[in-house]
Length: 165
Image 1: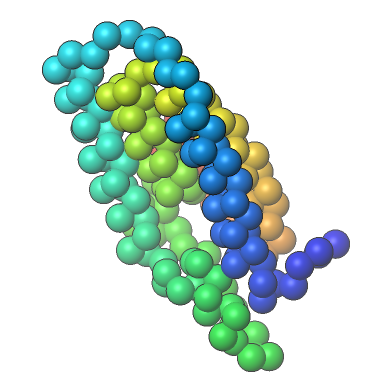
Image 2: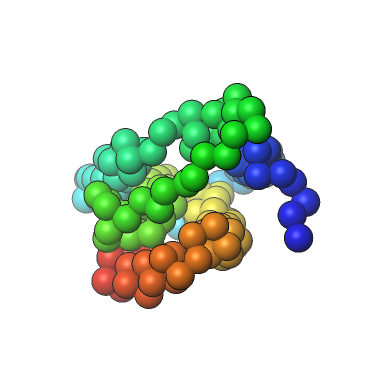
């Protein structure tokens, strides 16, 4: 059962994701920040490397997609013509099925290392939960869209961490 037409799905998904992120960011800015551990040059370096790696992975992942299509804008511009989607299993997608989610988690871990407080840890945990739920929903949709091809891809390629998870 589809509650939203395929034409509006991606745009609505992105709007909901952004809408859910805003209260989390607002709460982050409003809560008391209890420090979890003292930082030093090593934690700052490790955090910086995580942030840099996460951004690099994000760029690599986004380069594989038509950003207008990814954001849902091209779906709104389409008329009645039906364009077939293509399952992307090359590039970074041959190592992990959800490189953008992995990039976000790496970025957030870097942030926790640089600002080790309860608020940044809470943000990372909430994001992890959101991402894991989002992956389950997204993969259901992808199985419907791509069928056995996606089921096979799912069996062969790790979800977030190459060769592990």
